[in-house]
Image (cartoon, rainbow, N blue to C red; front, top):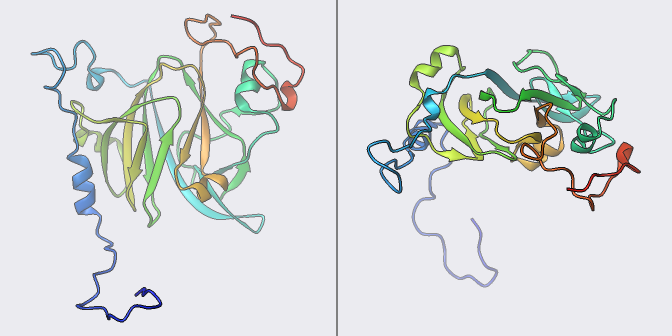
Length: 252
């Protein structure tokens, strides 16, 4: 109970109840949020020619968050990898093809069950792929995940462990498009993403203490094309640092 120093009144009535450990009500509310397909869209085909639920999946990533000690210090990670920044921004290293900064595949696309270790974690993905990402949260606190550069469809969430059978309960018609999603304690959340944006994109927890201490990774969306139709070149006035110092950018 907090009082002002000059407060003469006392608290009346019983104190409110404490936080609940039951997440079913909140989870059901989150699943009830849908896109209104009858607003601002052509009828009788509300999604036009684009139906995210009818596109074949290219790949599935299962990302499990965890906490632990590494070298006697508190760290957080994804699929047993606790992210450490490289000496050069990853996008610059990728653009200029500088070796030794990161390694695609330095983090597994499924939980390994091993202990935490340090690495610059980068997952590989192909441009214009259509992927499924499952966030598995076996901890007893809620998680919040954000994906730079993209909006995704939140197609499912539930308690327990995700399996391929969990797809039978997905919302493949009117899911909400977002760039951040929650994952309830001891639960999972699944999202669908069309990878239509070339680059090196950060996928991270929005719990900033955990993000700083390793609960993040990068998804490298790659194409061999160098056409500006797919990706604009780095601006001529971009700051080049680390191993990219002294390199030259090309003009448009």
